[in-house]
Image (cartoon, rainbow, N blue to C red; front, side, top):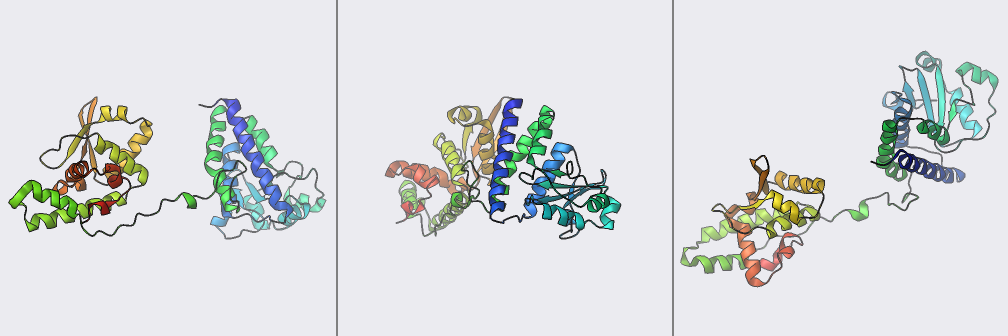
Length: 344
């Protein structure tokens, strides 16, 4: 676990960078914040101060004057990136008698840095129980409060910012964070594999040679169907999961009488130099696709069985045999999905 100092450093850096980015937008008149920024501020305030704020736009669309409210603690917030005095005055003028029934303290959180001072009419401050020195907050105020939190709460704030800052930059229209991290995943989205099944005659050719006159037309049709089903399952897997599946297949040897391959789980974990979390994630995806099963032999011994669509009509065994005979790299089939290599 990161030390208290390291956690605080990461938190302060993240908020400072966001503050600078919002100030940059403000200089060109871009003060609009969308719903996600309000929710971001709500969750952050709840973490830091222990509030139970809710987004009031869930109750009434575009609630005038205030965005967040905690009826238990009778406190409400306006969230804005506009730090100027007219914005503060406008917010206070919109606070209604109905608002005052539910809340007795109204605050403004500036997402960024507030002004050094504000000039607000005394009658307006009195009518809203507003103190411009205490009730206008910015990121520096949040940072000061964070410094006094327990280690557990600091870790909670750290985890929250780590997960949500990229989303804030994305919703504000930035292409990347100040650290250069892309806020869009579009370029990284894996393209859906395209393959229109034609035939797997190279596999069938070898099957006919091995079986001789006993290989019937019905068996050929059933194998074609099984191969097509298997390809569809492979195409539904992320490339990284297909690589994991290849690693399992690569380590298999003997097939059983039902077309299944069995591996020792503990041995496989030693062959694959990836984290246990990653290993279990990939295994779970393959289990969900019915490509593998995970069986407990005893408390310390588990086996992985490759079967399901891979075992139907001994498809996977045929693929392994033919790729070996023909000098085809098994990775081209199971990872790159070059099924056309089996067409004749």
